[in-house]
Length: 409
Image 1 (cartoon, rainbow, N blue to C red):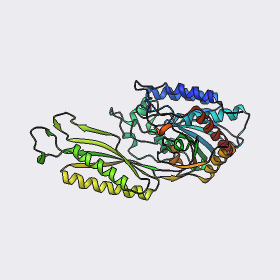
Image 2: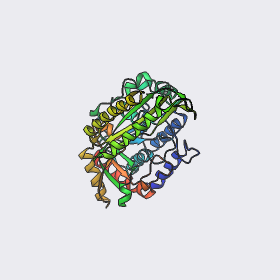
Image 3: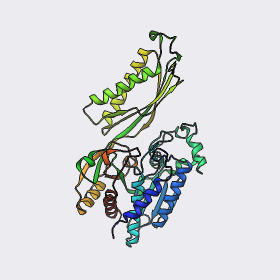
Image 4: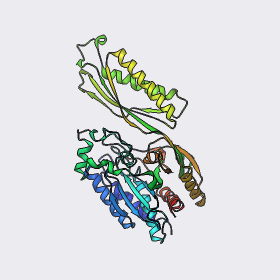
C-alpha cells in the first residue's frame, strides 16, 4: 500500500491556511491563538492515524502508538508547525504531517511495531516569537537555560505569561524532560532550505551533520543628538558602530575557508527619527559552522572585534548569548536506515550537511538521530515563495515510512 499523497497534500494546504498573512506567507507563532488552532487540527489528524495524543509541560504535542513491547524505548518522528514571520508552508509541517502519514499507513496496513512509535510536534523551533529556537526539543532533553521563562516577545510578553495564556503551567516546565534511555531513535523529514538537491536534480537527501547555531544579542548604546547641530567628530553614533560590526562579521565569514557563516537578521534603532543621531541599537548575530571549535573561535574573535569597534567609537555594547547548540554528526544507524530506504526505492543516495538548525541536532546529542531532506525549489525558504513539489514529498515520505519500519519493526 503506497503513501496517500493526496491526503498528505490536502493536510499541508489546510494547515498553511492557519496564520496565512496578507503578504502571501504564513505567520504562526508559538502559544498564539493561531498556533493553538493549528495544534488542535494536527491533534485531530494524529487521532485519525490511531495515535493517543498528549501535550507535555513545554507544549510539545506527542502522539503515541504502542508496539508489541510497550516498555521498549520509543522511535520518535517529528518536526514543528511554528513559522517565522511571513514564512512558507513546508518548513516544519512537511515533517510533522509526513510522520503522521507514515504511521497512518502502517496502521492501515496492519503493521504492528516492535517499539512504541511517537510523532512529536516540537514547540518554538523557529524562535520566531521569543528568539529561543529549538525550545521544545531542548525542554525535552533538559537543555533549557535558567532564564528561559523571562524571555520576552516584541510586545514584552514573557514566555511564562504566554505559556499560561496557552493553558500551560510554566512552573512545571521541567516535567517535559525525558530520559535518553526511553528513546530508541529520532527521525525528522524536512525541506533542505538550500540549493544542493535542486542544483543536482535530486528529490531526497540523507543528512550526515547539522551545523550548530550560536546566537548573540547586541545592545549598543551611544548618545542621541541633533543630526544637524552635532559635528561629525563629536558623535557617538550607535548605528554607525553597528554597521561596522555587521561589516566585520561578513568579512570574517567570507575570509574563512570553512563552512562558517555569520548573519545579522534583526536590528532595531532608537530613537528612530530622521533628524536624530541613533542612541541605541539592538541587533542579533547568527554564527554557524559544522565544526564546534571553528564556530566558537569565530564567535570569540567577533566579540573581540566588537570591543575594539565600540571602544574606537566611544559607545558601549552589552553582548548576550541567546542560543548555543553544538553542531552534531548524525547517527550511522539512522543514516543507514535512510540510505537503505533510498536504494530500495531506486533513489540516488545523496549525502549532505545541514546548515540550518533542527530539533534533530538537540536529540542527536543524546540519542540516535537522523534527517531526510527534500528538495527546495531554488533553495528558497522562510518566505512565501518556499516550494517543494508534491512528488518530492511523496518520495520523501516513502523513504520516511521505510526508515520507520527498519527502526521500529
